Structures are given as C-alpha cells and as structure tokens.
Image 1: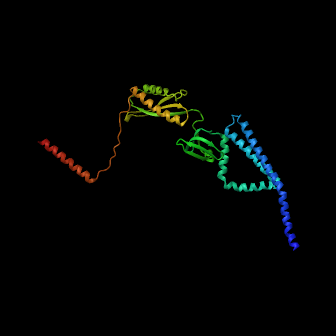
Image 2: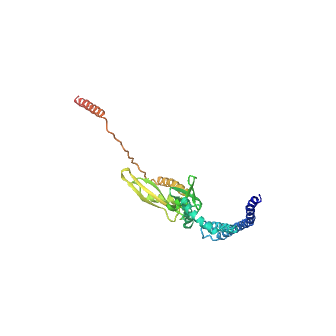
Image 3: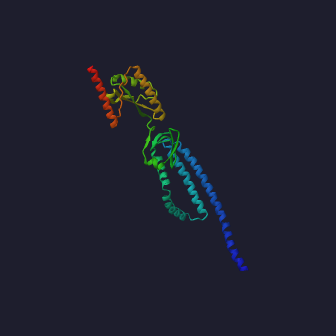
Length: 306
C-alpha cells in the first residue's frame, strides 16, 4: 500500500514543483510583455511626433514607419518573454518559418495585397483626397491601408479595392497636377464667320471665373458636314481638376457660348437629313399598283381625247 501511495505522490510532487517553479517565470514573462508594450507605445508616440515635423516625407510612409516600429518592438518583447519561461525561441522561429512557408501559399492573395500596399506607399501614385481612376472605378481616395485602398465614387458609393489590383492596373490621377484641360463641342452653320465664332466663344470663356487664363482657352474646327450645313467646333479650356469643376464649367460654358453666338447673330445649321427605310412590296400589292396606274393613265387619256 505504501508503495502505491509513493508511486502516486512522487509524480504529483514533481508536477507541483514544476508549477511552483514556473509561476515566477510566468510572472517575469508577463512583466516583460508589459514593459515592452509600454516601450512600444512610447516609441510609437515619439516617432509619430518626430516624423510630423518632416513634412517632406509622405504621410503614408510615416504611418508605415510608426506601425513597423510599434509591431517590431512588440514582437521582440514576445520573444524575450518566451525565453523567460525557458521556451527555445530558436526552435520556435524555425517552426514558424516552416509553417509560414506553407501558410504563404494559402494566404497568397493577402500577401500580394500586403506587399503591393507597401510598394504603393513608397511609389505614391496618389494621396488622400486625390480624385483618381483605378481600373473601372473613379472617385476620391478616402483611405489607404496596407491591404486595400478605399474610394468614394461620384455617386457617393464606397469602393474598397485590393492593393494588388491597384498596383497592377493603370492609375489615372486627375488632381495631382493641379489643373486639367476640358473640351466642349458645338455647331454652327457653314455660313458662320469663323472669326466671329472664335471671338465670341473666347469672350464667353473669359467671363467664367473658374476657367484659367494660363494656359489660355482656344477654339478649333473639328468637323465639316457640307451636306447638312454643319460646321463643328471644339472649345478647349483649363480649370481646376475636380469633378465638380468639370460638370459646372461645361454646363456654364455651353450656356454662355449658346447665348453669345445667338446675340452675335451667328447662323445655326438649317438643313436636316432624313433616312428613308424601304422594304420590298408584296407581289399582289405591286400588281395592284400597276393596275391602278394603268387605270389612272387610261382616265387621263380619255380626258385628253375629250
């Protein structure tokens, strides 16, 4: 009986001894984690405050530096805490490396978006509040994350695009250069005086405060349709690159040009064209038509004879 009790007590004592000896190490590891968390928080605030003074560095790059510093400090703290509880960190890292290699294939799309996000932060094809066209989507950039870029479309819809799609497709930045060229089309008669049309159109452009004078607006003939008495014109002008400016200036310019040409007596196209669609007539209808034509011809002949 004593031998059975001894066999039971010895493992229990060893287990309790391991637990008692592990508790101090666990407390030390917890304190180390708290310490590194505090260091990471202080380092993040200090880095953010320091980088805010360096305005020549893009905000996205500053954000990446701050986050990398914070997460890197936390990661080092985790490794130190694991070492404090006698966990072989080297073996753990090697195991994580093998697991990470396998996990990389499973999370291929996520990793692609992550890497593309970092490349975009350094390439800087656009910034917050830029109005851009990313693939088939167009709108204002409202958020740039490591994995995704968010647009608010002109219809007030939110579009979240994976960064891998953004990086591998064409990016059109409408607002980066500060101004943009627009064009409107209008028609006059071929009888219109070209000098008068140009003068009145440029005068209308000069009356719009939203249209820039440098570069100056200009007018060109774009098409001649002699058969329909149409002389097509195109007015080019420069203005702010926002979508609201595009819509407003185009509407205002069409109204101003129309009124200006009307006041100057510039003739408008007068001819119209019609397309007549013909279809074959049925044989019965064709013969009936011939009989009617002969009847009319006979009546006319008889009338002449009288």
